[in-house]
Image (cartoon, rainbow, N blue to C red; front, side, top):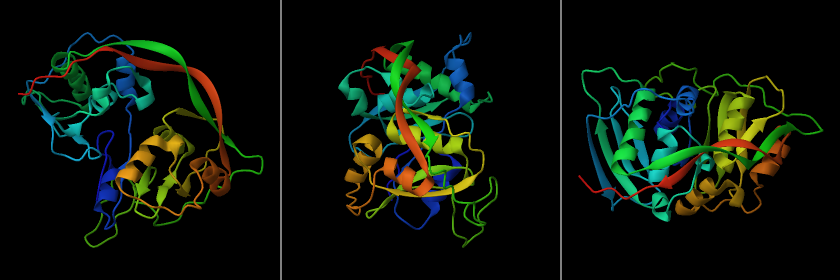
Length: 299
């Protein structure tokens, strides 16, 4: 199994990791609380008490992992600087602009720990990661609003075809998986599964907002919901990775996947399987621009 986590591990990722199949999972979970903090003014600088940063020269390039542990400890394996920035500031990839080529290729192992006596929230951990990037990588950035390409998620003229949620298709939030029971996706969460033969966007009892979220991750552009649809639905979208779904396409290549050549693109799959379409547009987008960054010394 190969797992690539673009953010902290959520229950969906844990469920798919527990399944007895081989998958590559692409997942991003953003915290609106931290985003609000980013675009406001913080009066307190939070820092890890101790941290270790080392260049990773052994892990395969497509395997990048990190986690926030209870108490605020942050651990990464082979994480790129751009990936660290995305999560420290809780931004999508298309919202982080600039920087030298090495921030997308060099991987770093980080073990950073806060003061043990202090109760640390996950939001505070991300703020401490910002400080670590500024101090160890000499990261300097500024915020801008730019007009960027985006997609509008709309209903096809023929109408939406959202599958009604099935009982037992997903695990209710907080419900433990019994020993010997098949691990299912948590209800309300979508993710992408890549196997040697196919790529699917899967989820049980998801909302249109969740679908827009995962499509934003796949396409590298903001996807804005214009459907006005409110029902929950199951999704099991079979599609073929292509240039538009760059992250998935790169991982499928690394995984040596060879899907059916007759499989349709994500755009066609949405129309044919869900009765939805993506229309290209432009709109103001908040972005973080990298002014300067340096390779750190190992410690």
